[in-house]
Amino acid sequence: QVQLVERGGRLVQAGESLTLSCAISGRMSSIKTTGWYRQAPGKQRELVAKFTSSGDRNYVDSVKGRFAISRDNTKTMMLLHMTRLRPEDTAVYYCNAELSWGPPSWGQGTQVTVSS
Image 1 (cartoon, rainbow, N blue to C red):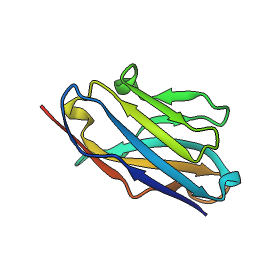
Image 2 (cartoon, one colour):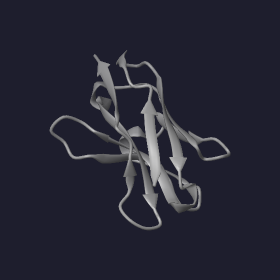
Image 3 (cartoon, rainbow, N blue to C red):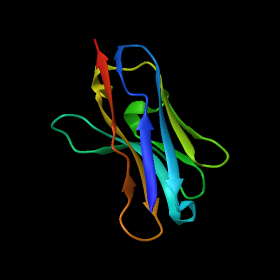
Image 4 (cartoon, helix red, strand yellow):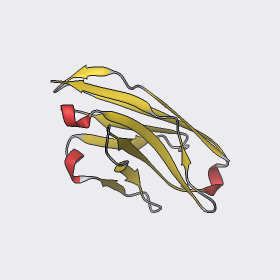
């Protein structure tokens, strides 16, 4: 079992920055990859940024150059640094862990709202 807890979502103005955190605990050896997803109202959940199994960082095109994913050396804290936020970034942001077996683990989500 892997547990994920997101924090940091709030209301911000367009152009501002915000950092989300994800605390990861449980059976760390079962984790293949971790990342951030988001789901806007009426839309499907989409990948925002992730660490691959080799440690590379992947980003969806819409956030390249604005968002950065990072983690500590223990891989128990993952951050999403978001800059130059836009109203279209408004969504519930979820922390995700793909596991070596079984379905992926998800956090409960944290709401980010960007006002214009």
